[in-house]
Amino acid sequence: MRANTWAGRNKVKVRDVPDPKILNDRDAIVRITSTAICGSDLHLLDGYVPTMQDGDIMGHEFMGEVVEVGRGVDPDRVRVGDRIVVPFPIACGACGACAAKLYSCCENSNPNAGIAEKMFGHPVAGIFGYSHLTGGFAGGQAQYARVPFADVGPLKIEPDLTDEQVLFLSDILPTGYMGAEMCDIQPSDVVAVWGAGPVGQFAMDSARVLGAAKVIAIDKEPYRLQMAERAGHTPVNFEEVDVRSRLLELTGGRGPDKCIDAVGMEASHGSAHVHAYDRIKQAVRSETERPHALRQAILSCRSGGIVSVIGVYGGFLDKFPAGAWMNRALTLRTGQCHVQRYMKPLLQRIERGEIDPTRVITHTLPLDQAERGFEIFKNKQDNCEKVVLKP
Image (cartoon, rainbow, N blue to C red):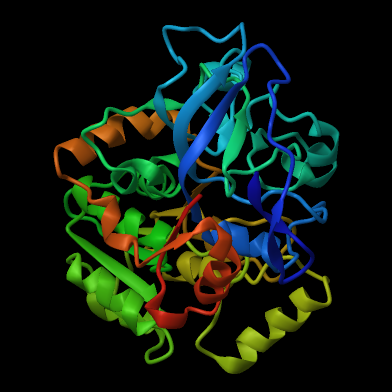
């Protein structure tokens, strides 16, 4: 089959690779009909997530048709012929974390738990196409994929919905929604979102759906800010204004009630010297993160507010504003998304027309053009917001 693979720092390559096979009784094989390039994939591309190997199949956002199931798969949950969306964290459904619906913390799905434990103190769940740190599982930017615990995670989709309407239930829509949900939004709240990429857009939409009075979009790309503004959100360009000062103006001097970091480890900063400091430290691997967005969110949030972090961080950062966090009674919430928890409720919101996931799609390409897709997405060419790949 054809698959998009990691080929070293700043390089992916579409190659012929062996077809996946059933390895365990609860596996399924899925013929992929749609997959996507995620902002988190860029952290792999740029070499900031360790343990990637040449030939690893990329991608953790995918859906398709079940073509084979293991003998242990519950037929009431998944059958051959079903059309399913696959969540990016692999969850067993039986451990303590899964029982608590903390699916991205599953205790049984990562065969390389020892590596993750050395990095994070405790292991994390297996993740499709996201390094050997999270299990070394082949990803979904391919014609076929093996799905472990197939009767736990995947969501069956009826034929009246298009792939484009439901594909992002695999990751970015639940991730954005969880970012807003962690804010405990009240009707009077002003919510500021750092990052107007796809996850940030869905965090904004989710904050609105959950009742926020105003949602502010912070980014530097005009086309992303225009997309957010068309959806009813207030744009702030951090290359044109001082973010904290502008947020104080918009909130009567108090700061946003809730702040969401939807950027993560490769953030930019409007000040060249501030950006250069962390960019150089990251380039020489003396830190793994550029935490501009996280610092701004903490320093901008009103006292007693909540900072929700859904941008991906992988290791260590410098100059974390612990004093502002502690002395102003801020609550910091974060986590890889527990996707399985949100798929059905968000599917219902899509069906009711409350959220339109298709609004972020700007490019649809054949799988064989994945290299081009990564290039335009990473470099923000052609007003690229989200790339969907068709195997």
